[in-house]
Amino acid sequence: MTTKTASWRILAPAFLAALALLVTPAESAEPGSQETLSMVRMIDFDECEPVKIQSKIMEVRPDTGTIVVAEREIRGVDVENGDRRIRTSYLNREGKPEPRDSFRAGQYVLVEGILHPDGYIAAFVVQEIERPVEKKTKFKPVELSKKGSRKVRTGANAQ
Image (cartoon, rainbow, N blue to C red; front, top):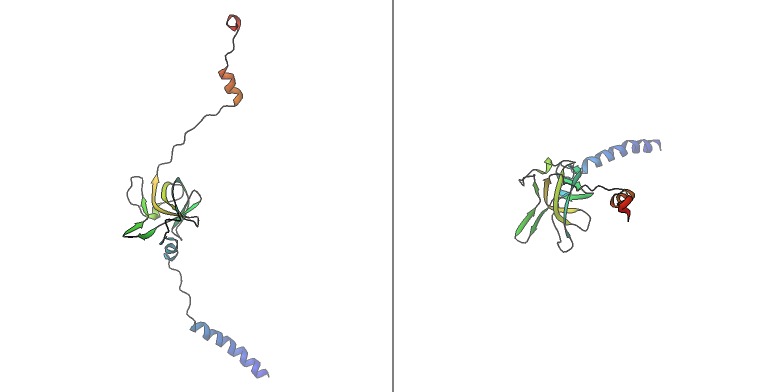
């Protein structure tokens, strides 16, 4: 009986090692493989709504090839629609083509595309823009604004 136990102790690891050599390992992910997964290849335009966002880039995700603007994931598009091909255009401030890798967190961009039902935006155009100028409104407390609008009459003008 000790011989059978000893033989299994030797044969089991040898069998597992041989099995591991026969099984083909999973293909390792290439650097661009995640990026192609995030690229939008098919769109049902009837289910999507057009969207236009002007905001700051919050995050750039080079591993997936997406950017986050206004808390929305922005994905590139490469779709054939009938006889024409639609691809995402990445543009600089002058409107000239720019590589996607040149965008970084903190830049202001204009994103035009469609809002997909899954929550991401399939972008047709991503263009760097100047920081939008916000109108500054001065607020006064209500008490101070009332005092400024009243005229106090004194003396002979009080009648």
